[in-house]
Image (cartoon, rainbow, N blue to C red; front, side):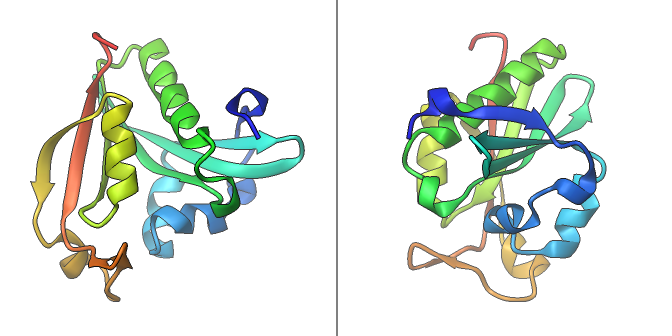
Length: 158
């Protein structure tokens, strides 16, 4: 499986959004519903199989946010996440945005590594976000997800 075989398409409508994939990145279905209808959704496919999803939302006239990005578990580790992140950067740049932001949890070690490798830099942390905003505790990599880490990519230099 190679990223070159990946096709990225705009979701034709919100009924076709792969909620099960979005839930991999954000386990709160009510939060998903709140932002998927106000953002732009893209699906990543290999042949006829949807393997990934990306939701982008404008924060302000200069900043676009990746609200959700997920690759189905059997397809992780092949570069598809990097491909989707680069696609998001291209979309943002083409639409005239100056920066692209993304947030993740303190326990998302693989995601933090990937985002920084792609050119994102940590710029803020919201302490105890996940313990205050989510009803059930979230654990990842043997670590409780407590804090929300914000990363930004400057699109003028990348």
